[in-house]
Amino acid sequence: MHKETLNARRLLCPLPVIRTQDKVKQLKVGDQLEVICTDPGVMQDIPAWCRINGHKVLETISGDHEYIIILEVGP
Amino acid sequence: MSKQRKAVALISGGLDSMLAAKIVMEQGVHVEGINFFTGFCVEGHTHAIREKDKAKPKRNNSLWVAEQLSIKLHIVDVIEEYKNVLINPKHGYGAHMNPCLDCKIFMVNKAKQWIVENNFDFIITGEVIGQRPMSQRKGTMPIVAKQSGADDLLLRPLCAKNLPPTLPELEGWVDREKLHDITGRSRKPQMAMAAQFGFDDYAQPAGGCCFLTDKYYSAKLVDLWKSQGNKEYELDDVMLLKVGRHIRPQANFKLIVAREEGEGRFLQGYKKDFISMNSLSHTGPLVLIDGSASAEDLYLAARITARYGQGRDAEHVDINVMNKDGSERTIQVKPLKKEDMPKEWFI
Image (tube, rainbow over all chains, first blue to last red; front, side):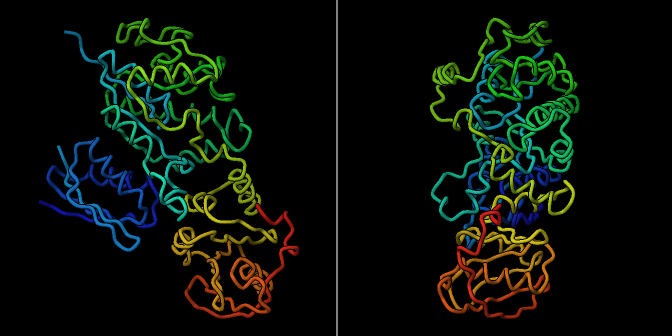
């Protein structure tokens, strides 16, 4: 399993979703991606994008004005 | 058994495109959604920034629609390509800086490219004749189809019966009799159809989804272009137009004043790109100075900054001035009075 991190700080939705979408295209099934954002909208949008496209959200973390989503790339 | 046909639906997040996709899905066509991000899409941006909007749902309506329809959604970043649409619209602007017809042609053209690359058969939009004064009229429907290059691969399920048959209809990929003949600005047929499909929640019908249709936003964009002497822009420029109070005391500089904590936090991310100011002696907003300001200009900007803080009635306010390189200094100013700020300064 390969794990990568995507810095999507300062980006407002839907840009973090677009960057996630583009990054996931480069990964393989089972790989993990950690997306770090500052727009709280990602807590809704990235999980929704994952559900639509068959990826799995492993963890979401709400910090001090920072939001982290770890997902596993689906088939 | 006949081959299952595939269509891509332009999903804006509103009701019409949701219904258009659903109508075609009901006919056994495999549908996926596509959504284009121009940089001017309303969606959750300002909700995400402003503290007072935190209680509002921040869902992205296009993603939400795709989930309701159980279809994939492809969100495409067209920020760079869209510049030419906005700067040089062949068909001109609408009431404000909205190049709606050129925008529609552009998006359908992008969808056409997408179906070619992804081996899909046709394109669906939620257009309705007479729905929009600029882009959705009887006369513009063939213009969009022709100038986008989509021609008869563009199906508008909500008003198809009022238009010549398209290839999906002629080939029997969809049954024309099961398509619709909606016209005009009334939303009643769409609402009735939504009820039939069991959609009891959807984005505000006919609501604007683009900042360019907003009078105040358009004024700020025109001011930006005028101040720099050309119509160029970067994404950060157009994002900043969505945030704060914009005050231009002189042609060579303007202030962007955070209106509340959320905006202040957002503007913090731009402190390396602009001279910034905030009050040290009193509570007050973060202010960015956009443009090339002289020492005299900065003094005026500091007086304006003081005016928007708790020290507005004080004799003196200490203002911290931070340069792009992080170096700082403090200047003491008398806050500018409300009557000394002409309304022409407010963009």
